[in-house]
Image (cartoon, rainbow, N blue to C red; front, side, top):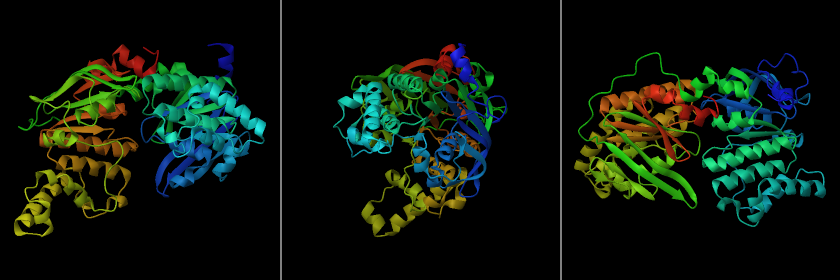
Amino acid sequence: MDVARRSRVDALNPAGGGEGADDALLRVADLYVSYAGAVRALAGVSLSVHDGAVVSVLGSNGAGKSTLLRAISGTLPRHGGAIASGSIELAGRSLIGVDAADVARGGLVQVPEGRRIFGNLTVAENLRAGGMAARDKGEREAARRRVLELFPILGQRAVQRAGLLSGGEQQMLAIGRALMAGPRVLLLDEPSLGLAPKIVEQVGEAIREINRQGVTVVLVEQNAAMALAVSDSAVVLEVGRVSLSGEADELAATDGVRDRYLGTPPATEKPKPGLASDRVERLTVEDLSVRFGGIQALDGVSFSVEPGSTHALIGPNGAGKSTCLNVVSGVYPAAGGSVRYGDKEITRLRPHRVAGLGVSRTFQNISLSPDVPVVDNLLVARHRLMREGFLNGGLRLRSARRERAAHEQRVREVAGMLDLADVLGRPVRELSYGTRKRVELARALCAEPGLLLLDEPVAGMTSDESEAMARAITAARAELGISVLVVEHDMTFVMGIADRVTVLDFGRRIADGTPAVVQKDPEVVRAYLGGAT
C-alpha cells in the first residue's frame, strides 16, 4: 500500500478510539438508534472517518446501514427513528439534535437511496436547487463547473426534465446536486442500486474523482466489489452492530466478508421438498438476450428450474437478475432466445397469459392495498380461479356465496401455512414490514401457481424477518410441491433455501451449480468482491 493511502487507512476505527481517533473529521461513538421507540436498528455502533478518506459501510438488508447515514445526516426523525444514546461529531461539533438543513450547511450532505431528484424540474434547475446554500454566485458557478466536468451528460441534458433521464443519469444528477452544496463530507446511500454494470463502473470512478478533489466520502453499498475497490477502509454491520472492520483490500480477502456476500451454508439441513405437483412444469430459459437502447441487459443467458426445486438467480447490482424475471413473467420483451414453461413457449406472452399458465410472482416493492384487510388482499389472487362473474358476486347469489366461501377457506389455509391466520382481519397498513412481505408471498400462493417468482423477498428485512421468510418459502414449496425462482441479494438467505444457483454478471451467466460449488467459483468471488480470489 502506498504512503498516501496508508496515511488515510486509519480512516476507520470501529471502537471509536485508539490512535488517530481524536482528530477524526467525522466520529460516531456507541450509537444506539430505534424506530417507533421499540425496534432497535443500531446497537453500539462506532466509527471514525478521517479527512480525505473513503469509508464503506457494508452489510446485508436490514443490517442498519441506511439508518446509520440517516442518524449522521439528521434525517432520522423523518423516518420515525430516534437516537437513544451515543454521539456523532463533525469536526468536533456535535450533530445530535441538529436539524438536517443545518447539518448540510455545516458541510455534511447525504445523497439518499433511490435517486430522489426533482422530477418535474430540469437538470439545470435541480443543480441550482443544490447550490442555494452557497455563499455567493462565484462559488455556485465554480461548483457547477466541477459537476459538469465530472458528469458531462448533465450539461447536455441541462434543459431536460429530470424525470425523463435514465436511471444512471438520475443518479449522476443526485450526486451532482449534492456536490453543488460544496460538502466537506458526502454520504452516499446505495448509489449503484438498479444500475447497469457499465454505469456502476462510471459511478465508482466518479466517487474516486470526488475524493481526489478533497471530499471525504462515506459509502453505503450492496455492491461490495465496487465499494471495496474505491474505499480505503470498510466496516461491516450485522443486525445493527459492527461485526468486521479494517482496510478495504484486506477485508475483501477475509472469510468473514466472503461469508457475508457469498453466503454461509446453514448448520442445519435444509427441509426436504415434497413431491412436485402435477401442475408444475420445467422452466427452461435458453440463450436469452435483452437490450434497452444501446445497453445489453442480458446476453445469451441459459438455465433451467426443475419441477419442485428452489432455484436462485444472483449477481451484483445491474447484473440482469430482475430483467430476467421480468422476461419470464411477460413484463419485458426478449430481443433473442426463448423461455419455455413445460412445452409452452411463453417468451412473448402478455403477463396475464403467463399468469394463466400457473406462473405467479411478487415484486421488490410491496404492492398490497394498505387500507384493505389481509383476507381481501389474498382473495384478489383467487379471481382468475372463480367461475362466478363479477355481477353474480355483486348480487350475492347463492352460487356466488358458496364459491366465495370455498375460496375464503383456501385463503385461510394458505395464511395458516405462513403464520398469518391471526392477521387476516387487520388492514395491511397496521402490519410490520416483514409481515407485509409474507402477506404478499401468501397472495402469490393463493393464485395456485406451479412456478413462483420472487423478486428480492427479504429486501429491507431484519435478520429475524428474513429467517421467518425463509421458513415460509421452504414450507410452501414442500407442502404445495411448487417450483421457486428467487432473485435476492442476501446470500445467507439464498444459500439456505436454494437447491441450485445461477450467477449473472454484466448480463452474462458466469456460474451455475449447487450453492457449495457456486460459493467457491473464482468468477463469482471476483464479481462480488473484486480482485479477491
